[in-house]
Amino acid sequence: MSAPRHLVVMGVTATGKTTVGRALAVALDGVFVEGDTFHPPANIEKMSAGIPLDDDDRRPWLRALAEEIARLDAAGERSVTACSALRRPYRDWLREGHAGLFFVHLDSTFEVLLDRMKRRTHFMPPSLLQSQLDTLEPLEPDESGAVIDDTRTVDEVVADSLAAVRAA
Image 1 (spheres, helix red, strand yellow):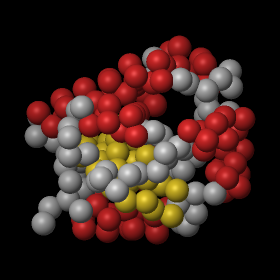
Image 2 (cartoon, rainbow, N blue to C red; image 1 turned 90 degrees about the vertical axis):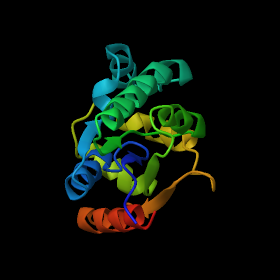
Image 3 (cartoon, helix red, strand yellow; image 1 turned 120 degrees about the horizontal axis):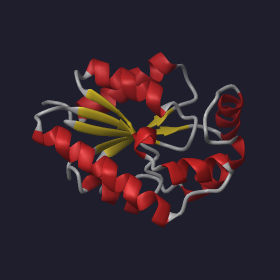
Image 4 (spheres, rainbow, N blue to C red; image 1 turned 180 degrees about the vertical axis):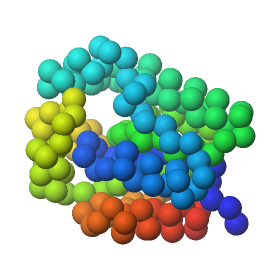
């Protein structure tokens, strides 16, 4: 059985989507896609100002990511995309790029995430953490994916993520 060809490493800010996603891409011989680089400048400005994005802000961003996944699929590539994908509709929009997406949901505690946010430089201020947690909708039973405990070391998170992907 082979692993899914296209993954989305999802979760709220500071879960380590980029770190875990890069490691998964290397392990699976895939292309890493940093979802944040697909945000239009207006989204970055809004989040930097401490204003949460709404669906109208997210739709063009998620459409661009879906198009990139579709492009990589058409090129025969495997991909790992780091993207918050907080709500079911957002994940559905991403699936427009490839219906068989597998979601690795990195799950952590408020305290761990806040500590990480305070120690990093990023456009997302700690003040938006609670709004992201409030927006988050867990994977539904009909969605292909796994929830991974993200309170542990990066190596443990990556190992569990790989095991879940390979078991899919």
